[in-house]
Length: 155
Image 1 (spheres, rainbow, N blue to C red):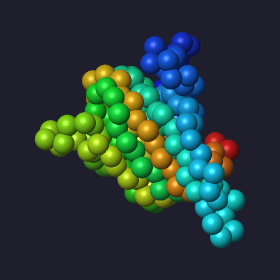
Image 2: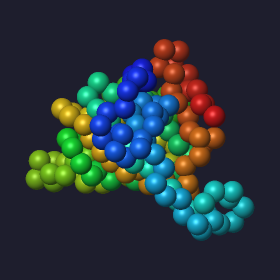
Image 3: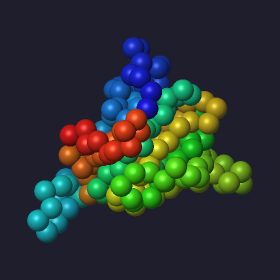
């Protein structure tokens, strides 16, 4: 995870993005008005813009819901999935999220609920949308503390 920058990049300014606790920049853009159902206190889904620049990284984390990454703009993003164990798998191979399927890039990728994930841009900024269902809540977010090897909940 990178330290929080002191100034927002121009695209983060234009999209009114704020620093995200895991690294990068984000803003929630949508929350479904529909409840997830049963006894779940969540709405059915939510979406955020998420922006990473070179030198920034989405630290290892996991959420309790499925998360769909949708690439929009800029350079490809390396998304690593680290399994569902107590800590991310050290040998997680990256998958490229980007707009050129002929080059092996995927315009969208699904991260199943409870799966450790980390992302970083390849050679330039990358703008994506992340759709989480049921909706994202920080209470369901777990950030991995790589210094001690223990997961840390930020909520």
